[in-house]
Length: 182
Image 1: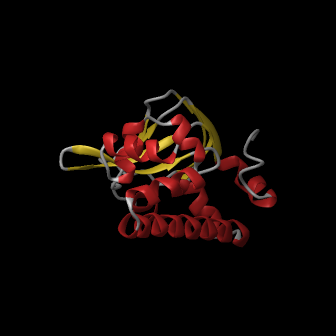
Image 2: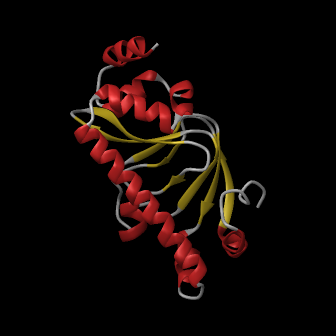
C-alpha cells in the first residue's frame, strides 16, 4: 500500500498489507466517538487528529496526532468496549486503517506481527504515561515548551483553543505564555 512502507517495518508491512485500507476523510470528521467501541488501529499518513473527552460540560483535548502517529482507542481495542474519547480530524486526512479482527487472527500465526503490535502498544503506553506525569508535575509553560519541542507542527497547524484545552489552561493564559516565549 503506497505510503505505508515508511510507517511499518518491512516484513510486518508485507504481512499486514491485506488488512490495511487507505481511507480519506475531511477536516471535522469524527473518526470514532466515546459512545461506540472502536477496535481498529489507524496510522496517520497525512493530517492531524485530536482526541477529546467531556469534562464540566466542555470538550477537553487529551491528545494530538500528526503524520506517523497511531490512533487507537485502548479500551475499544483491548476490551471491545466504548472508549473514553472522541477522535476528530483537524485537517483533511489520509489514514491507514488496520482491521482488528484479521490482526487478532494473525497474532495466532505470526510472532513477528505479534511482537510488532506488542511494541506499538508499549510505545503508546509510555507516551500516555509521559503525558499524565507531565500534566501532573509541570507548569503550563513547561507543558507548552514540551509540546513545541516534541510536536512543533501542532503549534503551527492547530487552533489555539485546542492547544489551551490540552494544556489545561484558558486561551488567554496560552496567549500570555506564547507572548513571553517570543
